Amino acid sequence: MPKMTLKQWLDIPPAWLALMIAIAWAQAEYLPMGLAFVGYWADFLGGILLGGGLILMGLAFVEMRKHRTTLIPHQDASHMVQTGIFKRTRNPIYIGDMLILAGLILRMDAVLALPLVPIFLWIVERRFVIPEENRLRRRFRADFARYAQKTRRWI
Image (cartoon, rainbow, N blue to C red):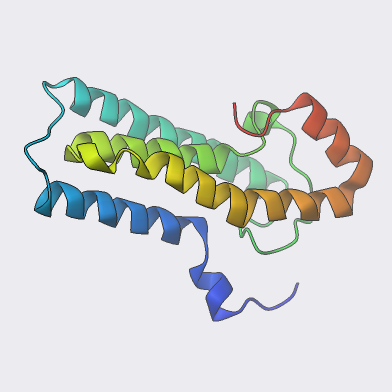
């Protein structure tokens, strides 16, 4: 397993997620512009999204640990996980990240930060998903081709 550089350790999805959450918090705190989600529905929906994201990530972590493969995006996987939550989506952890971000934006009343969700999706897809899938495609060839054909990238 090749050694990761400091840049690779900092360039991980949780760091990008933390950055987006910090931007959303700053928007809600310092630039609310009188905008807010009306009623308790935003807190309720935000909690559902947040909890759903954590559950999705937990299911993915358990499945990856079961197969003893890496969770770190810049490393080569030792096994291609196709069981559990990975039968439904190829990227449950990233979907979980997006649900967490959307849930926190709702709970923080960060209306202007809602565009961060598709921006985060774009960053994750370009920086992590495509390179990860390319590594899986090179290493597992026909298995990955079959998996990609039967399991959607997102939902």
